[in-house]
Image (cartoon, rainbow, N blue to C red):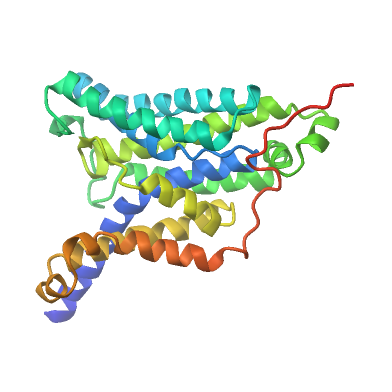
Length: 305
């Protein structure tokens, strides 16, 4: 009887880990693609929050979760386009633009929840507005989609001419320009695509896994995704391992909250920091071993003849 219970516990932890890792994986994957082109977007937290909000609004009104997912992806594309326009065409500072996205999202969503639903800080969508689980598997279809996207983006980045052009823009935009690659257009599109994946991550949070919208819903997951980009060495396959690390640590922490001995030893607020601290410690140990694209975060200025 005991081995059966242990197996069920392990299986439950693995399943819960897939839910916890999915938004991190999608945001990390999107940022990898964006940074491969030479653009940094630290506004992942804000994009996730805005996309999560619009996903709940649309899914709740239409009573169709997939319309909410689509709305979240479009919101990600919209914010990504603004960030790309500022950084790529206006040559603005990448970090400041990202901070602006995060600050705007925090204020807008807090206000939006009260305006749309008449409540402050928290709203739970209708049951019919939530993404249904895959029958018999107890996992989200968006988790399986994220796995497909990992393989797809790995192939795009390393096995296609388009991926080579994207990488060239991040490694040496001047040389890419000389051989006829439209650097600014390539960076703009890559930034929008990356933000779309982050928007999908927002939908996972609000109408799939946590099934709620709050003014602080991402809870630092956007910043963890930024750290995991370094952990993954800008490789989509390694991002899968990094996101599973965070997801499993988060799940184990939630399990520890129900263990009396652990609760007596570790205060709850400190326990909530375990997955974040552990993930950052792992990433910190890899600093110096990974190499970012050479011109990432540097606005490309074409020399005038």
